[in-house]
Image 1 (cartoon, one colour):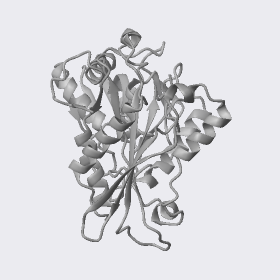
Image 2: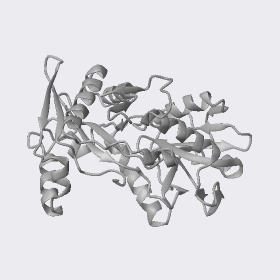
Image 3: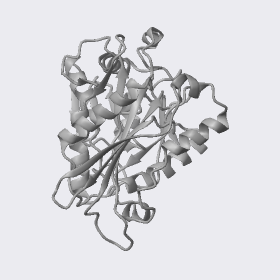
Image 4: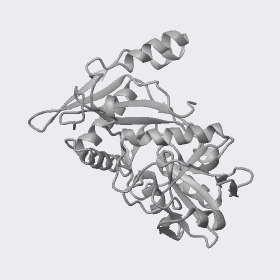
Length: 364
């Protein structure tokens, strides 16, 4: 099983270029490959060379607004193997909508929602036809699919040739797919508040913007070097309200049993998994609150904490450390009752073991 993200790009990729007439010129490309079984048998160096060819796009310019200034945005979504051998996408319409909002926020031509969903479905289907997809494994059911594999889809924008400060008026949209396993490494689920700022009011925090992830990466890597799994950001104005993790939204269960997550404003990314968890919590009759929550309230009153995201799913936090003090939610690192129930429901729907009562899954 792959651990987290990999660069094992599947053979079929997708490119679309914005045209002067307002249309998008689409192109599906089949990159060099062998059969999945033949690739598994290849020597590492030989396989690396083949994968490098699949991660090569000579038609894309090196110098542009994306590479020079981080002017670009991206999405992340998954296709989940089902027991009948098929694949199903999880809420691709929501990723399409957020992608369009991100492009609009960066003053780019907007890529249509329906084109996004169609391109994702077709790209995944073409790779599935070649045999590039994880196979459903009944053993995953033993841990409620926490160890389940899936197909990760990464759509992103890429600017036209340019240098100097400016906007992208004729971008590409590219989509690649890869196998993906569990994002967080097992055995450590401790978090620490970051002393840096991810986003400021009036900025791009609400956009899934390339540049936003620089501070997130630096904070997460510093946290890992200090023995933690995750960094948690506070607001930039008061430095007291919890906002989100390095690449995920965050939830807390308080002593009264209420599930609280920070309200979005314009500094927090509106996560598709976050929205889904709020819906599932309502299904389970869990009282929810979407509001500002201070780090002091968390440290004093939270009995459970977890992060959510496409990569993270629902991942419980063992503890949260702030200014040298630690609130322990799970001494043995196990999932809390609420997080476990939500993870079981979310993964059950995604892998097809529970009814898709909200119509979230889309067949490839």
